[in-house]
Image: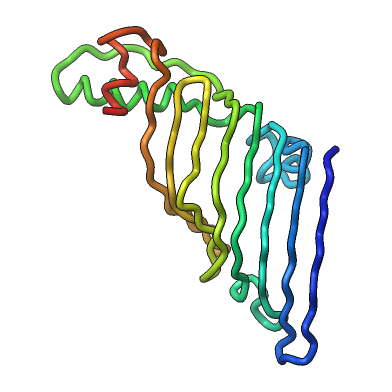
Amino acid sequence: GGSLGVSARLDQRQKPERFSANIEARNVDVGKMMAASPDTRGKITGTGELTLQAFGSFGSSVLNSLTGTGNFAVRNGRLPAINLGGTMQALAKMQQVFTLGQSGGVPSGETTFSAITGDLSLGGARVSSNCIHVDSSVGTVDMRGSFGFDQTLKYDGKANPASGSSGGTNNPLGAVAS
């Protein structure tokens, strides 16, 4: 389900030919869209939207020529392959071990979220974001970074636990997020 709107222009007077496109997607079933590829199947669910203005040129390296800006959102979904709470707690447990504190079990599961939102910038064969915000079942995450068309990733950020995630001063999420 959902809708996709695209308006595009082509300038054939230039060599290589240049193009521009305005893309708007609304109410897209992200899980169904990701199921189209075995590499992304089952990684995320939710309802997505995207607004993107892109420019580029045809020729031997279309992807490397892309520039543009936009924003995205995925709402009310799950990250079945990511256990954000467990990861944060595992880091807290490592900190406890290194500081001679007690260690314990690490929960398993998936991460549910109400929203993942962010900005997009295309250029230099990368998709960059200065502000990605995640409102999840275990807290919030703010990050920035980029991924390359060469399949490289570079992200950093900060996770903040939801108040009362594990209760009070013994909240192992707080030890990581501080």
